[in-house]
Amino acid sequence: MAKAIYDVQVPNIGEVERALGDMRDKAPRAMKNAVNQTATRAKNMMIRQARLRYAVNSAGRRHLNALKVRNRATTQNPTAEIFISSRRNDLGDFQSNPSVPHMGRDWVLSPEFHTSRVLKKSPMEALTGGHTALGQASKGFLVKFDSGHVGMVQRLIGRPAANPKSTRWRSKNGVVEKLYTMSSPSASAMHSTVWREEVEPDSEIILQERLQHEVSKILTQAGRKTK
Image (cartoon, rainbow, N blue to C red; front, side, top):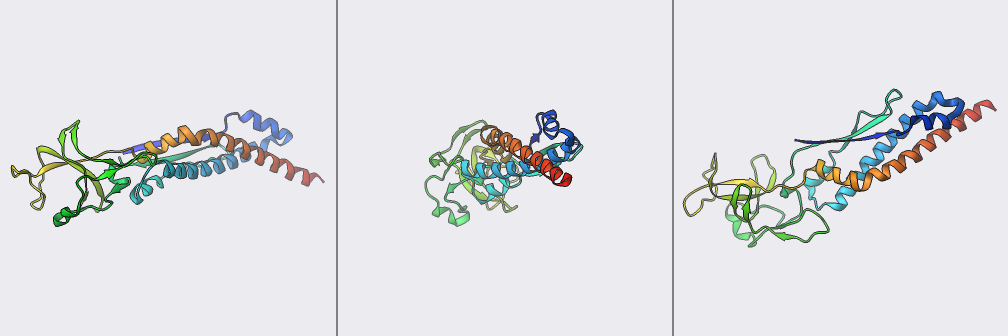
């Protein structure tokens, strides 16, 4: 299970206190509000940018949407966390053609090669098989597991499955071969890339804008009370 945490926090508390002057005791409230607003916007930006960058299907989008704001900022601790805990993705969570498994007798409906891609800017690539870290593997194909999950897998040529099903395809030697799930970036890895390259710089700007807004609001309210 992969995890990732992204912090949103005020870089210089003293600047906020100086900006408030005699109202510096209101600084914790200003920072709390600004940080929580920034964290929410940053979370939404991360999900949006990840969906623009990665060619995820409906299952992949559900994993990306698991990103949450947790441990929101308080007046005692002006830091918020954006958090995700996700299982390793497989290629079945990304665009593929065909997009549904052809199992049992439906295998005749499958093309010679399935195609897939991880990045939207990349072309669809044929999953032709070949050598992997675990040995020689078949071409890739979609399969629906008993859990209901649809994954992109390969057969490891010549390696028997630990718990073979009688309904599974057998090689010419009568072997039910072990399935190997084709891996791809996890949701936490995708969000980490988007945070580092796109969202973190923007979130720093948003935080400064929200701090200025909160400081101005406090000073304006104080001015009204003195009139």
